Image: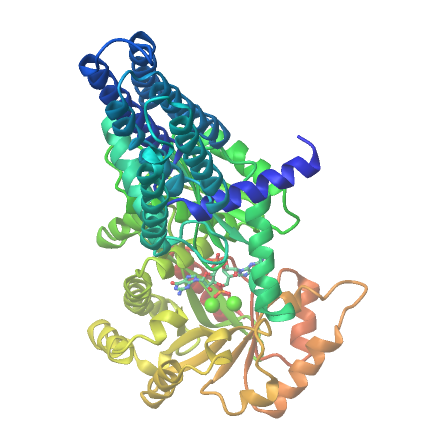
Length: 599
Ligand code: C2E
Ligand code: CA
Ligand code: CA
């Protein structure tokens, strides 16, 4: 297809989408048009049996034309969904011509007037399914045929077709307006695509059809990457234009039966009623090729027993993994896979989540372990390659993060006793991570207190690590919780410090006892840059503010030497010890104790 005709096709189809109701897929169009052909044809056949034989018309021709309309109607109901919108124009025009010829050949003026009322069905069809412009053209054609045929018929006055013509236009416009009003609630005004409500309806209808006919619809959810940056940088108007451009680029690529929708924001959904997963993957590649903007996609296919919402959650899970794995990618969530959320719930209930411990070294007393950080480990049986960060995000998205964090906290605090017994260097601190979502949950502070009471672990030996982002945004619930935790003797560490936006000057006012400098800073220590200026500056400021800092991600001897010489109080990283099981960590502490004894 040439570029020009392609872009015309975009516009035409965008227009069509606006004009027709959300459920007006090729299948609905075909069965409605087919039904109208069938009913009109059948009425023609009945009239033909009642009409007197003889001039001016030809009863055999009337009969043949009416029978042809019946057959076309049946054909359309059965196979019509394979037709493209352009074919429907030809069919409707053909129907008008057949009707006009039937009137012309009818042998009675009364029958001719009666048949003329069938032009109304043409108007209903075109005003519901077509844009106003082609619909008006079809109605004008029908009215012209109606008036012309009565002008030609010898036994009827020219005005015999006037009522049928007027009713055709009147009923057509009324039906067109009403159907547009009804479908407006299901259409996104910006793109003309079905909105969330429209898509949910279409999806439910297709899932019901799949259950009846055994088809296997595929669902794709798409999300434009970094779209908010366009809105932020160039304004919402530009953002809107990008969305419209994307829709115009995608519409020519999708099939006539496929339903593309914009459920909201920069999120799109594409339903392929007869596609399989692999067809959907190939289609997403083609969609991505039409736009310069990056876009992530999640793909899944329906399988018997899946509800519409289950299908959406599976596609969402895939989209989420696509985003997490670097965006501008497609991830397939094979049908039949249990959603991560379900697996995670089971794992928490059955105690299948493991907790490992990584040592945090006290640099002021070389060789001693000041604390251990509890890190969760869980490999979902269906996706053994899932990372801890992915598990945390999935738990946050599915509302399971509180349960998960509570589980880890309880395990860590009860394991802490055994670790403390193995550590002869004095009190050992247990560091536990807290999701920002969890922190803002009412009752969180009390739940921590309950865990401490039940496990018998001291508040003064617990550090809760929260990421810097919690403090970027002013969430009073979270900051209030931090203050209350500190009041009860629990220390707070700002995790991954330096990856957010808080300035060191703000640190003074934050409810924090400790900074954990993100490992990206330590990774800048190289043989060429043995003491990176930023690392040095942070150390100087932290010392001035009397804020202890843990340098994270120390992987080799040179990095260990640097952070120590710069005055960092603590360090953590593979160089000192990898995250290890409780038994391994007890053994490590025991080894250090025996070294200390022999020294
Ligand atoms: P984090 O809190 O920054 O934890 C440190 C992460 O860095 C751990 O990854 C650890 O294995 C890794 N790491 C430690 N030393 C080194 C090093 O020298 N080099 C490198 N390259 N990596 C090192 P992990 O266990 O995969 O955890 C990832 C993140 O998941 C954690 O980052 C934390 O934000 C989160 N997380 C882990 N457990 C929990 C939990 O129970 N609850 C919550 N809410 N988040 C958790
Ligand atoms: Ca941490
Ligand atoms: Ca960290």
